[in-house]
Image 1 (cartoon, rainbow, N blue to C red):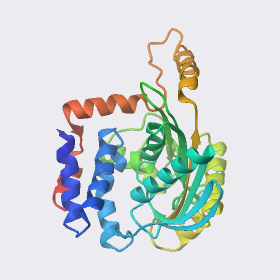
Image 2: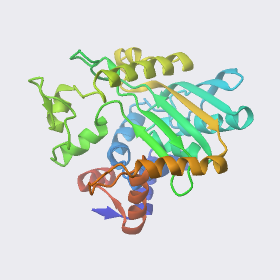
Image 3: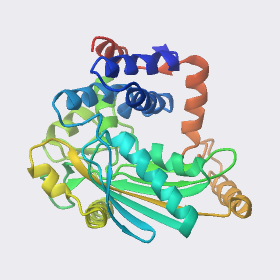
Image 4: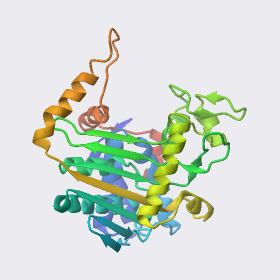
Length: 328
């Protein structure tokens, strides 16, 4: 079903304010969840919202907390998130990185002791819309087996790279597994097969059955061993730059997926000079379909189409998920 964007946002805000959360904080959080669903990232919009509420009720997320600066080294800063809402900490950190880049050409802000940021692309877009290249990544709880292993020891650590572009920013937002766990949950709920294998079933065979993959917790890393290595180094960088907890510590703490470490990097760029270069690269890439009728899209292009449709026709929602939120 589809519902108006403002109705979706209002429902999120209603639930949050009923938890005695300040109006400004409730509005900011509700906007991010609504925007995620509006742009087609349902797994970190409506579908994830009940989990966020659960974490608040369990005292794992402190709605009124504020990040605190720990260290500063020129264009690099370290912050403590104090377990505030991960989305608001992330917005704050990217804003700090933008300010540092404006003064130094580049800015890097690392934060420890923060919470799930929901859709990482939100903060890449934040940088790109301000006219800066944005790069950010986070570690997570261990939910991805290393290549050659069967037990989860790596985080499904998302990587985001955004480049500002008139007519549509280029935004790569990817999990390190073939499918994010949010996407697997979405396919499971809809009883749909994955388009390509996304992990292993209990017999150790590659599978397109989301439920079977979720049962084994053996998601498939992108690029097989290459994705496994990328996950490891992202965890290393997030931990070392922030001075925070690693995937290992987060997982073994028993506190669910909280207290994660994140990095936000901004780079100042000459957008007028680079516009033609970006368009040249995208135009050349789009000619690579040969005799095929398949359309080639740059990262973020389909998101813009989904956003336009959502604002025109209403945001797509899973009816069961929508009813669950209305009952909160």
